[in-house]
Every structure is written in C-alpha cells, then in structure tokens.
Image (cartoon, rainbow, N blue to C red; front, top):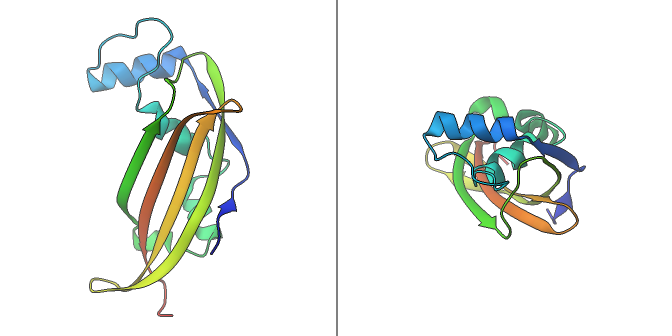
Length: 136
C-alpha cells in the first residue's frame, strides 16, 4: 500500500485538558501557554475524525483480535500551546502482512499523525500489529 492520507480532523487543546493531565500525572503546573508534551500523542489520536477502532476496521484490520502497539516515535517540532485548535492530519504509511510465530500471520499498520496550523507542531508515527483475521 502506498501512503494514503486520512480525512482531516481537529483537536482543541483547552487549558482545562492540560490542567487535568498535569494533575493526573503529577506534572508541574503550566507556566504560560505551553502545554504538556503528551498532547502530541493525545491530540493526534483524539483529533482523528474517527475512533482508532473504526479506522482500523475501515482498513480491513482485525481490531477485535487485539492490536499491539509495537512502536511509537514522537517528534516535537514546536511546543503545543493551550487555547488553540490544531488541525490533525493523518496518513497510512503502509500495511504489510507478515508471518507471526504467535498469530500465524499479522498485519503491520504504520500510521503517522501530525498536529499543526499549516505548519507541523508535532508528529507521531505508530507501528501497530494486528493478528490477521485470516491467512493470506
């Protein structure tokens, strides 16, 4: 599969969301407008136009078999700020089926999701493994 863009989404990073994450994680209080960096991940997934389960199933992947997050790379180009709405731009970078000792066969999804406002602030790249619903 070649790189395939997903429909765009949006994530509103409110001060209240940032405060809640900081409270739950024991992070220091926010100074200024700079948001906690975990919002690169939370905003990417939360701003997709459909839940990850629906996205996976639309790609023919067996979500109900129990996907495994095999890898995550987070690039922070610019700090995210509270009180802003970010455009969420996702793309499927590839799906490959490989033999698996554990599952027989597994589908490997490579997904990239960026938060920006015309220029990227952050990008996450996920590698998710799905047990294959059936052999090739």
